[in-house]
Image (tube, rainbow over all chains, first blue to last red; front, side):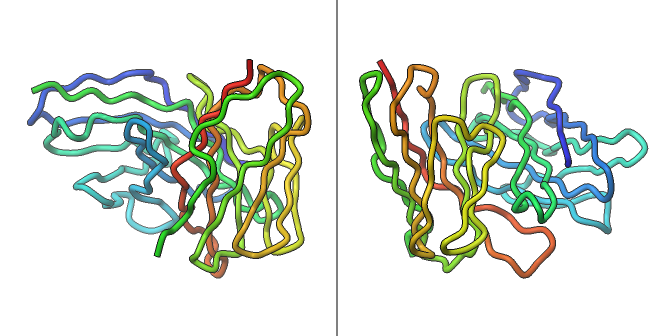
Length: 115
Length: 114
């Protein structure tokens, strides 16, 4: 099984500054990792995923994530934050086939981008 | 293409009442999931289905039942609601064929049990 942890409950950043939302993982085998975003009163939207290959994964809305095997991390990044990026962000690891490929979510990190 | 839809959007129940949450997807996905979201706990898997007529338990299945009679629908039932089941419930679906694939989420059902 793949478990993930998000060490920060909240991240605050000024508009225009780079942002990082942290995620660490613990897996037995190859990690399959995801980032999702949830805007207020909405469902979750897929941002990006890591399977294998390039350690830098590019996703939707200008987000990217850096996979680091030695640090067992999969941090979400964006070079220049927008106020509209303010939302709840979830990191998730995928369970194997015998668990239906279900996602194991972190607790979520609330991102607040101030003007 | 509506994606994943959930009915109802909001519901208030009294302890001991029963209800069914309906999830429908029009993407012909084989896999469907029910999660619950509680503050500070992320999303936790209740039940899932890998195809029509099949269901399996997830991390927190107690107090819930599910059925997948049609490929496009996945029902979540609460036979006797308890205040601990106050939560936001999300349905998701995904397609097989790849080792790793994204899940598509519905808008959620906010349930309050008094």
